Length: 201
Image (cartoon, rainbow, N blue to C red; front, side, top):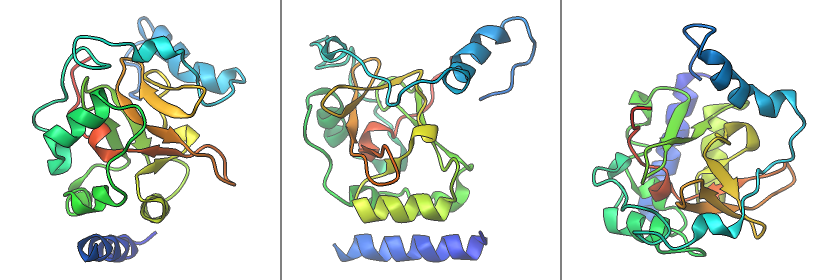
């Protein structure tokens, strides 16, 4: 894919919006990380990985232990993010919200593939695009109204789904919903839920 094509796609999306693992450094200590990241590949696992309703039980701040970060990426609105992440189980940012943020504007300066972090904890939740082009990721997300991720773009260490399709983090952040289509699982995610800054692990 030529960079010019990506820029033209970004320009199209911006116009539309305005109109309305790390490699182990040593074998010792890396085996645990390797087993976590390779287990899903080595062992047949049905995706999405499911969790019990208990994960979303009331905590100190809604369904999480604390509010969302103050300095969210792409100028995502703090109050909207906190409400959707921590005090919500069914609703979402409005369709196309992500196109009205600085996400597309900052796209050319972002490291590829793009890493999306939990807005509450800063844990890595999604990495995209994986197994497809950036152009394909953007077009699909624009078509559905929300950033849309596929199975291989999900970090299953920290992401789960409930039986009703709700997509959550392992610490209780509401992320969005799994809405499968003809290609398989499609995780329709609120940008405000994955606009966090990474935390040191």
